[in-house]
Length: 400
Image (tube, rainbow, N blue to C red; front, side):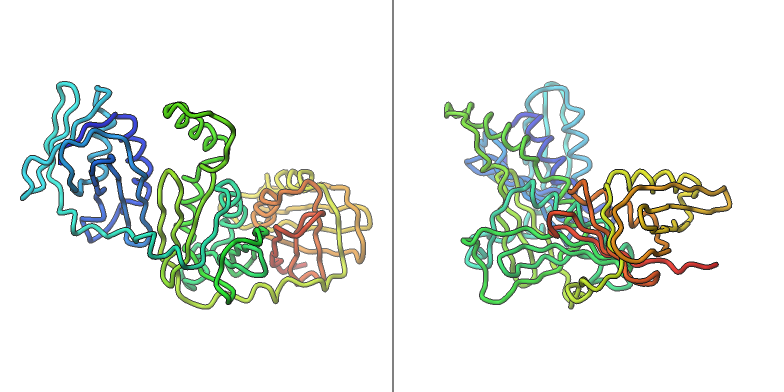
């Protein structure tokens, strides 16, 4: 292999795939990034055994095609600290995978590993006949961010460390459950979206979806990149959202996200997810309508007297015209009143404030509904206009 490419393009690719490189592993090959060069340019691939990323073709002058696996952290630091604008990479001893990186007067010789030992990316064409979807990167990133905080932090129940992605009745649902709360987000799908005859339900590791949400391009960034690409090709730069679209496919063991910039693959978690749809119901005795920001700010003020490492509950006293928020800790106590439209019974109930605040920050509506039944029954938060996003939170027992 012998290539020449720009420093910035190579570094961008390394920073992208580096997110999935294993920091601690008994398999040295997973500490590497795979460089693949052919006549069209180079691709970079990284994997931690559970999820993988491969860049689209990075423009490069390829004098000799080839492949080599190089230690990702070392290669990234070498490229970052090179002073020149272009970097030459060449395998000088294929038997030892000896690779030379040069830029300006700087030269590094590093020992790589055989490319054949690196985990293979799936052949996308083999899965395109399976259930497939095409939606905007912005939409799927928002759906993940509005639910990911409810994924279980420990692996006592491995199935709860992932999020359910489900296609049902022309809608795509994403659901996270940690045993104390449920986060649900729904997006209506166009009628032409393909799917198997039976409903699709898979569980994707939360860590994988969290990484995916961080690297998905925003609509503005995607549009800017597409206009720049068209300008380079001498094409018209009319507005287009094609580069903000994500194609993704399900298999029995994997989910594959394909964008113009990269391909992201994650293993699935095997097991039966909780039947969340049986828990959300309309059986409530108290229904309040409240300003989301006012409610959130009231909770933030109330918890100022709580230490971060303490799970100090907040008490909600729901009266006929307000929600009174109080918090009592060894540091002191707080009290606040938030105006609300209350329909139904008055109620005293307590919650972990972090659970309430994370749900309120995720809700897209400015006016929300909160529904209650008893002081020991879950609270359900939704928007006023629709229930495309909804959250269920278990209360804490009040001790008098």
